[in-house]
Length: 277
Image (tube, rainbow, N blue to C red; front, side, top):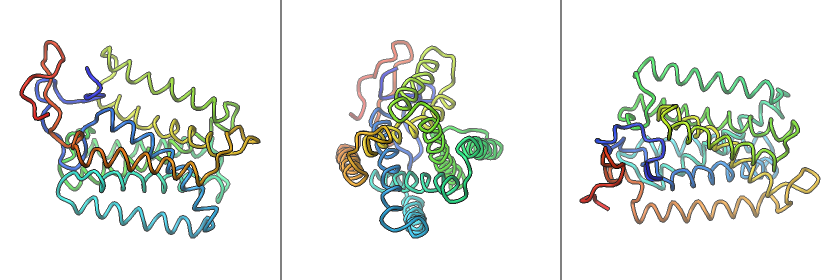
């Protein structure tokens, strides 16, 4: 299976259309996802430093509500709208994890399992209601609400997990290696049929958060904390520019628009001729 169909859970013979407002899961999806995780991590810390923790959470919460309102309001997938919502989920998910740890004194060894339980609860309710967790079946308001609740929970869980490993011996560089290896596990397991596509997708989706956040923290934080010392503002700006460039590319080319990826031949696994691309 090519990179155009990473963790795709639809039958190979019917890879044509997916939910109107969820992009195709291509290599671009994963690149932007990692970029948003890192940018959200450093942007959250930067806002807290500039505005103070409480105003930063208020601003982040309002921006999240506004971005999700826009996402729910549109009738089709629009790259800018969708990825803006993902960015704001990343920023606010970081804040949620940080509030528990810094504001309420909850250790990462406690908050990480709590967020894992919260994510499990979202998945359980989603499956009990809809009998599927596939992102290709997000075709109703209720399923869309479950989808975004799961996305928010994955970001909070990933933030706590990344901070946990970074502060318990691995450091930021070690965490990057740890999660880079970990994210290969669902890919390999799915490739060899040991893990179904839905489980593989959501496992990788969770792991991208601590991977991107650890990388951004390593770049931004000072040498005394094991980082490169580039600073929160420069790293946030650089990752934001990268996100804008990739999303702009997709907005123009529509490479990730629902239904634009050609169906695969069930025997060879290669793209058939006559696709729209």
